[in-house]
Length: 320
Image (cartoon, rainbow, N blue to C red; front, side, top):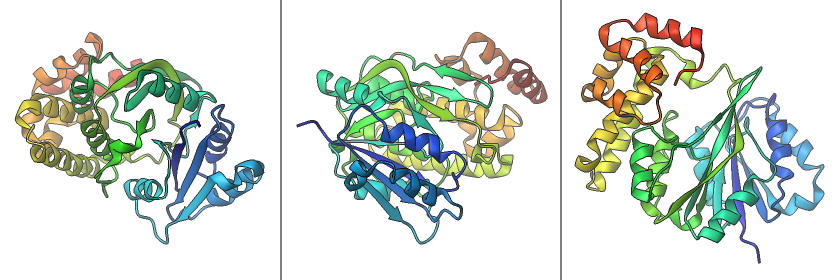
């Protein structure tokens, strides 16, 4: 019998974008899927739209669960609620404003089964209003290399491009903070895994049309959020007795994520608050997934030309 895949989808204020997500999930070519939706006290019509579209697929009625939160608890806890209700041999979390290629689950699980690995990751599309780009993961040699590149932000610390065996969720702690929750969970999953592989194909669409994203907030709030999850990640590494071995990767990841979140503006001030030891241009030039041009642009932040970074990013667009 084919292995069961659990797709967990938190729902909050996605009335205008959830439809595309739902059709892409309910029309997957792989059929042995259970769908777990977690209504995180969404005040709009998101769940009504879910119920309407789910009604078009009566054959899936027994495979669809809708969990209700009485109040908004955040993405991490919503994913936790979904996981506790899941029965799948494999787990994947999908955000309700993103959408998948119709053969995504089939490709990922076939790869996992053929190669007998605990985690399968894939490339992804980034979708803006008028265009899309493909984000390709850099290569990694084994599970330890994968861990280090996730920590250093050379590979994306996201859960929605990774199909994971259920056993890797043993003793996982889901965070209550709202920025960096994917990194916190992903590191734990990798820690529990023994093998990983990559599908060199973009299979999911990351929707960047949401102008209310937390990453577009003011710098003070962003610094608070980054500091919160960095401290949580550091605590994980210390508890695993591997902080010293991963110190450079940890600081590199903090610098990289802070540069992106702040657009390279007042980075020194932000890192003075978040983690002063991460303010080192060496960590920027250590990154394998940044082009020399991008490194030069971000290097301007280290010589007081923060505003030039912002200007160049606008001119050349989407420098990460």
